[in-house]
Length: 301
Image (cartoon, rainbow, N blue to C red; front, side, top):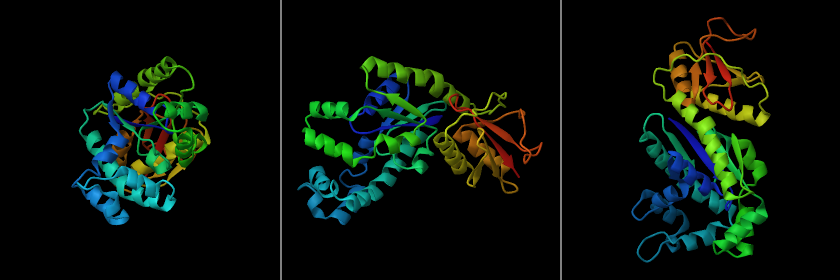
């Protein structure tokens, strides 16, 4: 099983991408829906929101008054951060429940509009970003009933593509017709997500034959890989800048690290084409099962 995040600014088309992935067979969880669930009447999330922002954000029947809350947080970055500190951990926990209930070999997708940190991106096997020109986004939002001023204000309140792009492994262009976007999604599904999930879902974790390591990864690509590896092994990971990474694993923890890396998408290989001078002949080597970014990590113990 692997997880993928679909992210993009408001009006970018990320919901269209998620719907297509669901049609293809993915298990899709919408963060906006999860965000509503975690502040439903009677939940600890709603109680925390009311404690922070006051009874004025509740309706007469005790539900969340979303308009009242939006009026407080939309123009106040500190208030918005406080709200996110309450809701984001709850949403992540709800997504983990969806993930943990998925079948082996599944592709579990989180439609997540607010993905701003490398640490969050690293918690997914793959991050898919959707981009579209601002004027097209504004036109789509107007079609949904927003005024142009409101649409542009909403866009300006979010991070831009310049900040979002480094967090994404796949970048989909939605400036064309719908069919063009669907074709991009279908290609990502068949060429990347399905084989990735199939490899990670192999409980036997059979050794993979070595394939050429991607030596042309960008600094942003390498940063995402490094963050994922560090999250998996729980220790610092060194980037050798040639598609290869290495980590010092404490004595007795090698098997644990290999199991964690398997879950994160790295599988054992029987041999290494060319060891680096600092690698020993008995050091375990694992290769990424992601067809789009073949990298490897050497575990030194």
